[in-house]
Amino acid sequence: AQRVTQPEKLLSVFKGAPVELKCNYSYSGSPELFWYVQYSRQRLQLLLRHISRESIKGFTADLNKGETSFHLKKPFAQEEDSAMYYCALLNYGGATNKLIFGTGTLLAVQP
Amino acid sequence: DAGVIQSPRHEVTEMGQEVTLRCKPISGHNSLFWYRQTMMRGLELLIYFNNNVPIDDSGMPEDRFSAKMPNASFSTLKIQPSEPRDSAVYFCASSFGARFGELFFGEGSRLTVL
Image (cartoon, rainbow over all chains, first blue to last red; front, side):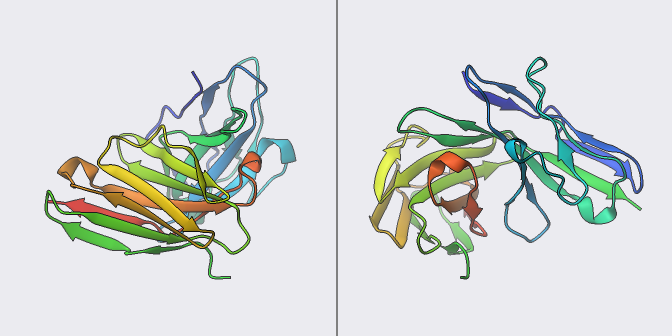
């Protein structure tokens, strides 16, 4: 079954430390993966998608098909990165394409 | 554009009462999604519409939940009768073409059922 797993509910780091938010997926086809972010009192919004191979706000994510992972990384965390992060998988089902989210990881960056 | 608009932002009701949540998608978007967010289960897709037609309602918990989209600019999610376990944040999102995975979310409706 298609599934997204985020093993950490909470990740606490100090400002300037590296960050890695883990995401593993289960999908039978070629996956299309995304990271969404929800800052305090703001809407859930798209952060980045793997097909774009982009870096947004210093974050990058590499798809590793061998390990079925799509971890989100940033070399130096900032306090403003504190937010809830969701990994998501686009499940192609013919007429029923839909986005499946993980349970989310709360990133807390301490000063 | 003000983005996806949801109402009410907060709803507190008693068990057994009917709850109606409303959503106005972004103009021009042809797909609309209802998600439920809880601490334990994260974001769960309840139902989604494409061109006002329900495409996949497999995530709707049970018959107490129903959703409609009478036109391209309005959708409702109704719970009748409500139960305490329905307490959650309900998000509406819209997109232009579900295939691309870029959803635009509303601010959510926080429901508390006592």
